[in-house]
Length: 266
Image 1 (cartoon, rainbow, N blue to C red):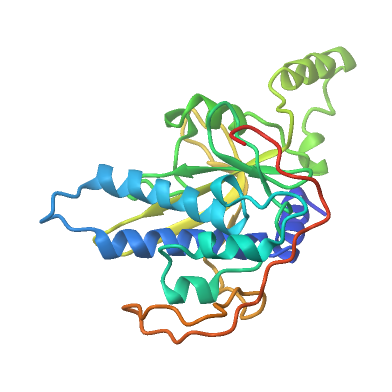
Image 2 (cartoon, one colour):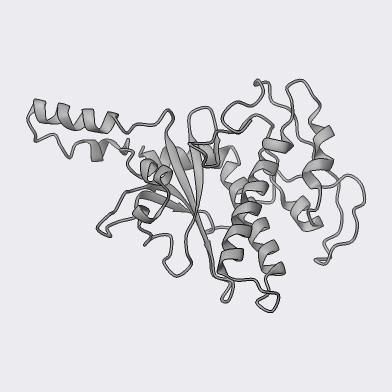
């Protein structure tokens, strides 16, 4: 299987892709509800607010940061905090991810989340450029470093097979100098407040200083709706919300057997 297939199968099977999509949907819908040019909001406000809410929603759905569940503590005790300020619809559609299945794992100050063997960062892309045409030379040094990571696809690793052994060794040495402590991907997202066009892609970015392909591979997280299963539902009546979604019983999170969170920012 390719790197892409391995990642999508692993994260999709664990419900993590649905959780990322939920976090993005929650953040963008809230931003669009609040956005008002008459109130002085502009593209900067839109980008900063969406990033802040997206980060917050990822922490909520993965029980990270201020929403972390300490090892040995009943996960139900944190549900009230997780649900704070969320609409009934957001609570009803939040995927149920066991605490400690995903932990915060920042990279040089850039917010990141990780499983046991994979980390992902988030990157906001200007809506006019599009996530598939973005030049990673315009991103932060951290994202550029991620975009320099070599692919693990066997087919791509054979591109230098025709070189002499010493030349291959030189290329491997240069590659190893840029390797990160953990395989790292990027979730790129954009939003056009005027048209409502949204983009959400998970992939392995490619450093493209001359405007080439932006990804070694990518997966559109908005290509299909989230499944109905595995959702947290409120157990007690909640205040009525503008969306009018009725309350429903809670599906409680169950703490995982793993130890507490590790990584930067914890």
